[in-house]
Length: 580
Image (cartoon, rainbow, N blue to C red; front, side):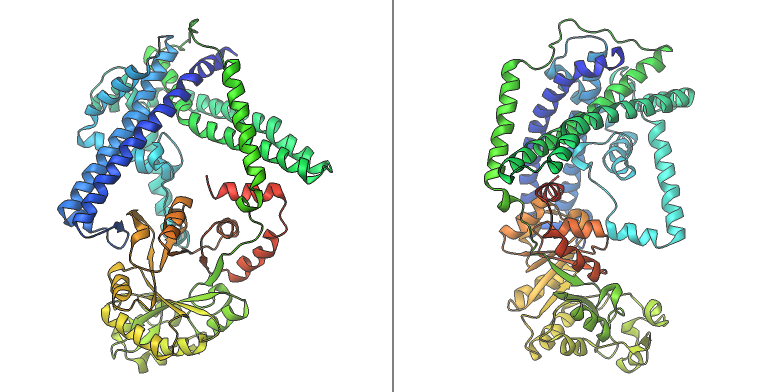
């Protein structure tokens, strides 16, 4: 019990600190957002996307946005990490914890990061730690990760996988070696270079003890949260599933325990990093003092919740349960309205970007089929995804280097490569064609020609022209408003929902509930690409997106009937996953 006393004593301070600092940071983000939007507006933009990233490096507005973004990272490090180190030091030394003093000391220490080494430390904390899934990171970027399509590309090659693994190992080693750099800066007031050297020295001398105590700490904290979840969530829900209670009784009780689980999850997220910093601070004192650091309890500390606070907490939960119960079917719908779009013709069930692949998508009941068009040397439009025909047809030439006659001599598993017109004819009246303007020839000429062919076959309602190049999509939407358009992006900042198009195609990790809601509020539709994993498909089928692009059409279609057979508990869990 003595070993966990510092953690228990720190809980009220951590919760109070987290709530207040989150509010302060929210104000900062609001102000930064206003400045950011003003800078974008002055440049004629509403958002910066993965297809327009050069704007950040080639304009004064972009450079100023980058500087403000870096400042924001520094602010987050000050509030999210530095001040927590100060708080941890005071708790461990049984000193009076002053919220304002912790914030002030943590904020002033940011000045030590204004050098090259300091900037690298901030960037590591903000972006490398979340990708590795280890170490200390800030809440602003804790969800940062490698986009799914890039991860799939890396996994498809042994060489790339090895290189990625090696890079991860290097970054992990660097991170572990510098675990105590913040403590040296803040607790011992060391310069950045000295704090870095000291951290490396401490880890080198104590790495066995560090690993041992980290494992014990992780097991202890995990056991605490898991044990609580099992006793107060899992067992009660299992009992409810066994007992044959009327739904009028079973549903409110189920909601009550699920709400309790959500609260526990939020608390775990809220307390995870601060408690880990507390443990690292305790180890720092032990290693710098050369002996086991002993914690002395502060007798003036407040113990637990008082009766009034407990009553208010229970009353709030009961009110939430009542509101959810009253609106259950609206909040947790049984069915899905998400459409399925086959990737590159018919997905994995058909030959890539072929007529037969398109027909396969139709047979599987897909709402749409996504294809890729590129222009040949003689201004014809053929269907191909890659920059060359090497992968699908064994020819390393690019479409723009070949004539239509030469392309037509190539085959994909015996089937000739189709033209855009042939795909339009094959899809008319059967399936919606999501046509990506692809490659080096995706320009205004391609846009004009594609629109002309869509109109020629009277398929304005059956074809959506999409692209990763926003300038092309903006041109089509502005010049031909009767044509449906879609912009594909795997990363964007700003008012993405206001981009000039009908559909926004988002990569899986960027398709958050807030983003989806904002896009719908602007009267636009949301596509998510490329959703192949079964769990990911189920996840997005339970969201408000309008469609998913997938290689596994049959798998996605088979999930839809199962959604309609879910229990009340499963409906709640599936929906909660899409929110948090």
